[in-house]
Figure 1 (tube, helix red, strand yellow):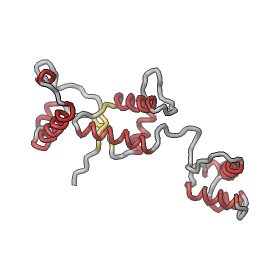
Figure 2: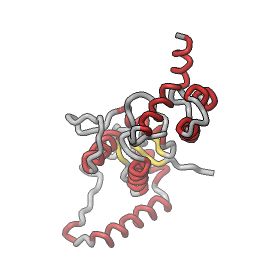
Figure 3: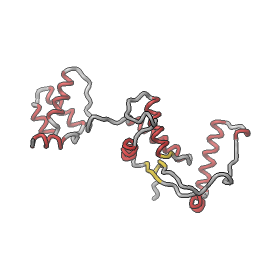
Figure 4: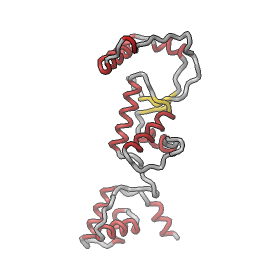
Length: 206
């Protein structure tokens, strides 16, 4: 029982380099399984499985994995999501949490990536969201202030310049005709309301 507890505590704590080195030493018969396991702090069962798979000609992953589940998106696709969230935030169109979860689901479906998202709701789950945010600390979930506060602190030259820069980009890209441009004032649109939390890029001010 004591040995099993010690091995359980080591599970997933090893790194990719140590595992590759240990496997190479065992395959070249420079070390036994037990010796390599002790020296590189890798569970003997894990080392045995990797060596056996390689001897059988199977493909092996050397990345530590806790449990039977793995991340849905590769680092490249996660970076794509991060950049998209930042881009929308910079355009003053930050995503709500619900919108982000639906976006993640749609991306997985479009790319035919195996996932464990909720197909009935067509959205990723909360565990995916919080794990994703933890892996990308440059993003944060915030509740925006009401419009009255934004008027006091947000209506300034940099913000107005950013608005017109984005407007100019969109006009150049889509070439909107005058009949497709509308003006909307606050007569029928409430400016002070309860907001949902948004996924935004963190701003670091020196």
